[in-house]
Image (cartoon, rainbow over all chains, first blue to last red; front, side):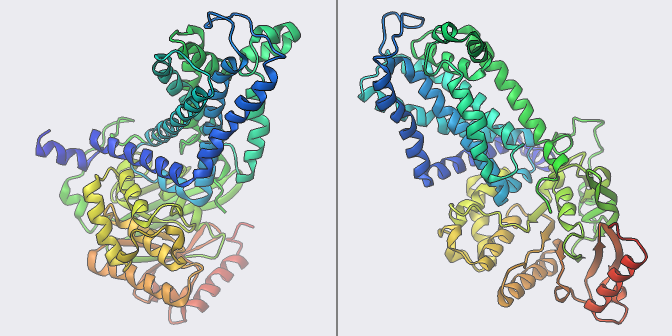
Amino acid sequence: MSATAVAAATRRGFSAMQYLICLRGIMWREMLRFVHQRERFVSALVRPLVWLFIFAAGFRQILGVSIIPPYETYVLYEVYVTPGLIAMIQLFNGMQSSLSMVYDREMGNMRMLLVSPLPRWYLLISKLVASTTVSVLQVYAFLLVAYLWGVEAPPWGYVTVLPALVLSGLMLGALGMLLSSMIRQLENFAGVMNFVIFPMFFASSALYPLWLVQQSSPVVYAICRLNPFTYAIELTRFALYGTVNWLALAVVAVMTVLFVAGAVLAYDPARGLIARRGGGAP
Amino acid sequence: MNDISGKNGPELPREAPQAATSLAMPALAMDRVSHAYGCRKALVDVTLTVPQAHFTALLGLNGAGKTTLFSLITRLYDTQQGTITVLGHRVDRSPGEALRQLGVVFQARTLDLDLSVMDNLLYHAALHGIGRRTARQRAHEVLEEVELAGRARDTARDLSGGQMRRVEIARALLHQPRLLVLDEPTVGLDVASKSAIVAHVRGLVRERGVAVLWATHLMDEVEPSDDVVVLHKGRVLAAGAAANVVQGADMRTAFTMLTAGADSTGAGME
């Protein structure tokens, strides 16, 4: 790019470099926050491990898992439940970053983000990418501990799972972002737990295969089938074994686009929910 | 959407560089701006101008609509009626260009308390697309100016209220804006910090030609040579040079008379 072109770019609009600097800045801050909030990392790791070490050990004898794709043999319950726990990490992270958006907004940091001259959709997507990166790191930390515990996936599975993690992380992060535009107060995260995290987690294929659910309750089965979280889990489960669940991929991709669009719309100054509500301004 | 390239609608003519620096163009112009939250009217027909290189005080009691006005200038939400222009750039049509010229200090504390002072500044610089090296250099300069260069590595949480405010002002200047808007910047500060901040901002106007819109409900922060805009219950009651608005009375008396007059004639909305 010539000197005049650079000058023109800085005078009006922004150069690709400036977009990159902005993304890097947002990611770097998210990392710093993650590092500073050590309890957040520890609890993100301990939560699924409690399920893996205790719940799965207890359930192992009660629940027989037959051979279902992508598994080629009978698997232990620990193995079955691992993708569900991975998705749980990402669900919590998505909601937690939504909590941090609410917190940010309360503390005014969100205001600072939104007065950046870069387009607002870009700022929100950068924030989303940053929180997804954090969630992927958390998942790999969990996979490492699970590996040491004896829950092993095929070696290349650890690589093929990455794109699935990115996509499902984006979907859950975008859902969190959409919710954050609707939550007014910090305390309402308890509400998010009750009304979003628990129903999504339990009405999914995280803890039990859907054919088992179908046998006991067709209604709950139908709900599980409608739950996008089920597809995030299945996408991850198949990717961990080097295969693609196309239906899950399609659902997760479509839901990601919808949630991102919803979040961008909710934070849009003209149509947004913030505008309708007054943004907490006295 | 924040379309900075102006792809929405017809391409606006590019401002010539001379026009952009012309002092005749106001730093901030609001033209008949109205805003309502549901049926509660927060701003009614607000017209005001902040000239370049001038200190303009926006006087108003709590609830006068100052914070709404700031939310509109910074485009937290769109203007429902009327137009807002920052140095020739309409906030709704080219928000990127308008926000780039604008430094903001919000009433609420907006530093990330877990991060160091320097990290807060670098983050802000990144949000404006300023590269690491330039950002670091400018951060040192602005911290020097607010006499906090020695605290760069400290966590923001460890600063006093006055110091945080100074860091926020430093941060608002990092991208070298030509208009600085501050929403009640001295609330909750002791007398010494307060006068240090007022003096610093007045210095910016004098020495660097930054335009300032300073919202306050404290009459003693206004000097006779300032421009003042008196906002009361969402309406502009008076605007002009402070000396003219006051007309001989002292600032506090004049303000009380103005707002009381508005209330008795029914110009208020409640």
